[in-house]
Image (cartoon, rainbow, N blue to C red; front, side, top):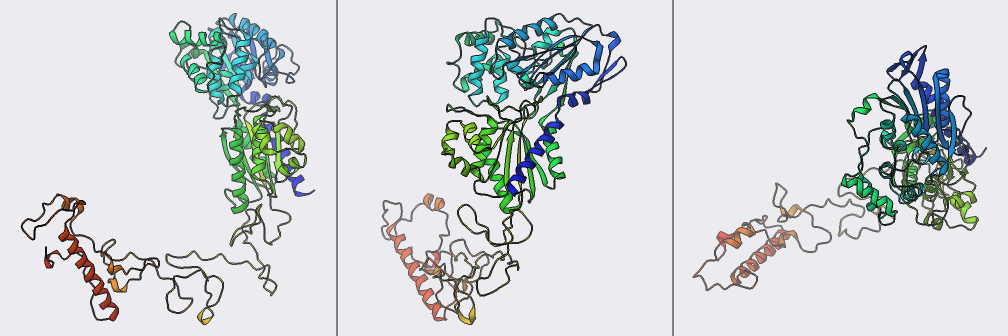
Length: 634
């Protein structure tokens, strides 16, 4: 098996391990358990003998799997229920009906299911227990328009938001205020019954109010926030008139707001987080380490524009390949989160495919690297692909099919480009849904056995650089004349201030001499360049050696002593001091100086030049650097 094939196989294996770790049924089983008539949810215990009915209503892409797990635990205690999930995600159940609906665009099937779920929870009493399995996708799968709105209004606004590049928190802030069941309103409908929500997070950072638009969670956003989001993305004028009127009425106080934090109804609501993208990332890391990779989790809150994130991921991979940072090869970098795509073209793709295509451009020509980006639900955007696995040859494969990578990114047509390279990941519905996953796998190049390594531009790796992050130094050949190719060339010493690195050529005594050192004005060839020091008069004496012992700056032909000495009186003080009167009829110049002062300056310069000449003759002490006003005529 060649290296590229091995990297792809390992990426698939690591991805499967991550998906197994966030299996919805296993996640529910860890949070929910029953001992006779005692139901334990996290740290809270419910007495089933005092519970009249147990109703299960689920929503989201993983709702079917989670609902079946609840059935298996509670068995005959479940009296009724309904769960709505995405197409292809339904599983057989015994007591709770499971239906499928449209995602990401809501449809009539979801609307019908929402009305049925609303009826179930509306009829719950104080002695009833409502269990709500929630996972990502629930916002679209359970569309129940607020008064005065219709399904088309929700679909139109949802499509605008999803193509705007807005983060999911802002998208759901709008959705909550157009819905009669999101934003804590399912819990409001179920009151005074006890509510237990089992939540599988697909949002970076796991904010409960943003997962499926938080139907059982207090909503911190307002109608004003909804308007601000639509205006911020230039969508207000494009939204249906009915939507704008509804939001305006809410801002004016004519409509009931969503329930807020501190509302007493939430004292009978328990929200439990049963699975997150962090769990998937940790499982991926463990599997990679079992395969022999040095692993590190970069982040579990990955966010931003997909193509920009792809560039960053590629840059991190390059850093690891060239310098072994943040981890040396063989290495695995893991990131989890959810990016966004601002749709500008008419192509087909998803956020993970766009991230992968952008990253492929960043690692083009680099061997020993593979980048995997996938959606854990098995569906990336409106396509049948979960994501893609790209490597250093992906761009070449795409070009050979006559596709321009830049144009594909500009048109949001990542699916076509990656399909041409045969780099798409097709998993089918996985039955779960947590954050997207990004894996970067790196290994030593199989062809890199100690010789010179060239990058895309043909440049040779520099002294002391390591191969694919390994700790050994680069080995070099000393040329056709001999030398041991397996001998490690030492890392050059870091130069001190004023030192120079020797180049080619030979000087006196066989010392190497660089031809690019025209600053030398004498002395033996190959002598070290003197340190640059500030001449006296530029920054004061400061205890430095006399001016005559100081070297000149190589670009300044004027000796330091010939420069005009600093004035002893600050400029502002001189400007405010009155001019002397009655001594030679001083007249002002346009610049505020005097003709007499100009004469004084010329005299000082002449003295400095004379002292410099005397010093070169070896017969004069150093010149004072302060202005000798007391000895000069004024």
